[in-house]
Length: 125
Image (cartoon, rainbow, N blue to C red; front, side):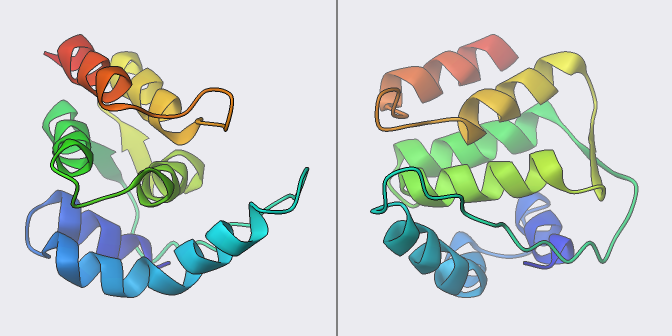
């Protein structure tokens, strides 16, 4: 995924519907691969921007799209993992970095629920 596409979404210059067109293929791959126990899933990131600072409001935006069912858990995990792993992104504060880490780290034993995501939003407020 090109990091510039994610940045446009975070800046509200690209709709969630348009972003989902760009992430459909890798998210489908993740869905298929996650059926295999212990599978390691590579995330391809094309860092085509630099120095992008992620703000609390942008993390809340991703959370709201999950709560409003515009993103599902796999899509939320994918987007926050790209933010976490890409050199294109940095964080305004450690609190924001921790929030992104929580959102990117769900498992079948510890799934992301609306309650968990609402807790992330409250922690950023």
